Length: 117
Image (cartoon, rainbow, N blue to C red):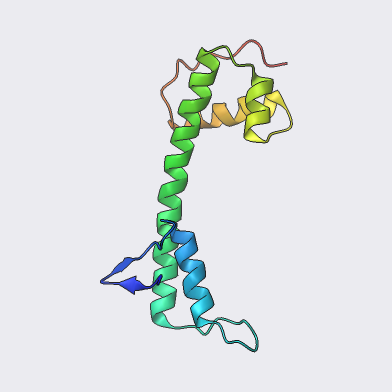
């Protein structure tokens, strides 16, 4: 079961802190209302899960930056990258890559990319 153990959150069978938090929420819900019964244990576990989510988001941002950079080195267009990321325009993909560079998610020359239409 996904429960707090020894000061650490058990991330559950899928290895997902959010899944563990959801499972904990469901265990504390009342059948009549599906409302969570608040307890200190559940609250602390959820706060730790949120902290883990922030760490994972940073890791995913770094991975995304590296993958975008690698795709560009292979000659992938911004239009193709945008489609792969679920974005509607090449400019949106370029802007996301620019934000990664500004935050330092990935080493880059910082030079503007000439083929963004």
